[in-house]
View 1: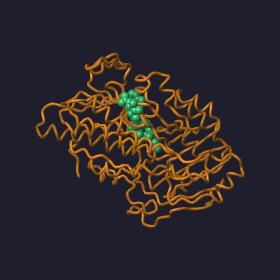
View 2 (view 1 turned 90 degrees about the vertical axis):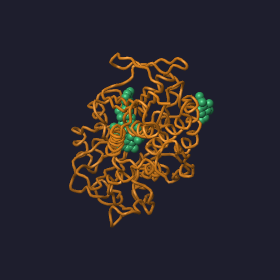
View 3 (view 1 turned 45 degrees about the vertical axis):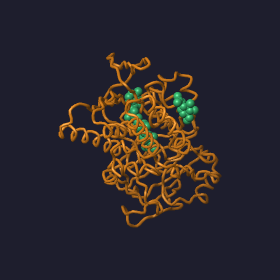
Length: 430
Ligand SMILES: Cc1cc2nc3c(=O)[nH]c(=O)nc-3n(C[C@H](O)[C@H](O)[C@H](O)COP(=O)(O)OP(=O)(O)OC[C@H]3O[C@@H](n4cnc5c(N)ncnc54)[C@H](O)[C@@H]3O)c2cc1C
Ligand SMILES: *[C@@H]1O[C@H](CO)[C@@H](O)[C@H](O)[C@H]1NC(C)=O
C-alpha cells in the first residue's frame, strides 16, 4: 500500500531511506525535509564497513561511491615541529584494492560526496520512474524546513506542523535528523531524550583548510598536552581536513553548541591556541572555514526506535559515535531494515515498525561497543609515551586512532558477524 512519508533530515540516513522506499514501492509519496538552506554536503572522511558495502552493492551505488574514494596512503605521527615520529601503513600504489592493511571491503569517502551520491541517486531513480510511465507517487526535497510539532491519533497517521505554520498529515514520519535529533525530543520528551544521550567526555571539531606544503597523502596526527589532539589528512585533495579533539575546556565547549558558528570557533581557538605543530595555520583556516562542524562525542541509547507512526533512523536513534567508526554503517543498516520491514508487510505499517525496532536491537548493540577507556593523554609524560611507543596502526581511521590512545583499547568487532536480513520485496540487486 503506497504511503505518504515524511523524512526529517537530508544527511546520510534520510536520502538512503528515500532510495530504498522508492525502489520498494514507486507509488510512495516521499518528502525529505532538511533544516539547512541547502544540502549540507560537508564533513570529513566516512567509511563503510561490515554490512555497509553489501548494502551499497544491493543499492547499486558501489561504483558511484568508489569514484569518490579518498586516496590516503597511511598515517604518520608528528612532533611539535612537524617531525615524523613514526609512520604506518604506507601504501605505494594508491587506489588499488587492499588499502587499509589488506582489508578490501572498506571504502573511505568524504561525507559530502556520499550525501550527494545518495541524493542524486534518489532523484535520478524518480526521474526514471516518471519517464517509464509510472503514474502516482513522488519524491521531493524541501530545504530550509523543519518540524515544529506533531500530533498522532491511532490509525490516522501523524499531523505535522512545519516551522512555517503549514500543516500536513503523513502515514509515517521518520526522524533522520542526526545525533541531536529534535524529532527524538518531540517524540519522547525532554527527560527521555536527556537520559538517552550518553556523553563520552570528548569534543570534536571538523573543518577543511587550504592545502599546505606538507600536506600529502599521509594523514598526520599530533598529540599535545592537556588532552588535546589534532589530525590533518589530505588524501590528494585541494583541501586538507582538520580534526580537533579535546577533553579540556569542556563546559565552555559544551555551552557553545547552541550558539553561532563564530562563537563555537572562538571557544575552539581558545582551547587550541599555542598547542604547537601547525596549530596556528589550522586555526587561521578555521576562522574562514565555511564547513566548520563541532559536536560532542556521544551515543544515543533509546528503549524504542518508534512511537506510534514516528520512527528514528541513523544517529537520531542509535548514534554509536565517531569512536566506533560505525555511524555510517549503522545508518545504512537502519535504512535497509526499515524499508525492508515496511515492504515485507505492506498493509501493516505498525507491524513493520515493530519489526524494525526488534531487528535493529542486535546490530545497534554490536555497533555501540567501545572497548576500554578513551582518555586523551593529558600529562607530558603520557604524550611522550604515546608518541614513542604505543602507536602501531596500519591505516588511519578515527576509531583506530582513538583506540590506540590507550594501550588496553581493543577494536570492537562483532557487527560483521550479524547476518543482514534479505528483503526480496525491496527489488534490489542480488
Ligand atoms: C555537517 C555534518 C558533518 C559531519 N561530519 C562528520 C565527519 O567528519 N565524520 C564523521 O564520522 N561523522 C560526521 N558527521 C556525522 C555522520 O554524518 C553521521 O554519524 C552518520 O553518517 C549517520 O548519518 P545520519 O544521516 O544519521 O546523521 P547526519 O549525517 O548528522 O544527518 C542529519 C541531517 O539532519 C539535518 N537536521 C538536523 N536537525 C534537523 C531538523 N530539526 N529538521 C530538519 N533537518 C535536520 C542535518 O542538517 C543533517 O543534514 C557529520 C554530520 C553533519 C550533519
Ligand atoms: C523495541 O525493542 C526493544 C528491544 O530492543 C524492546 O525492549 C521494546 O519493548 C520495543 N518497543 C516497542 C514499542 O516495540
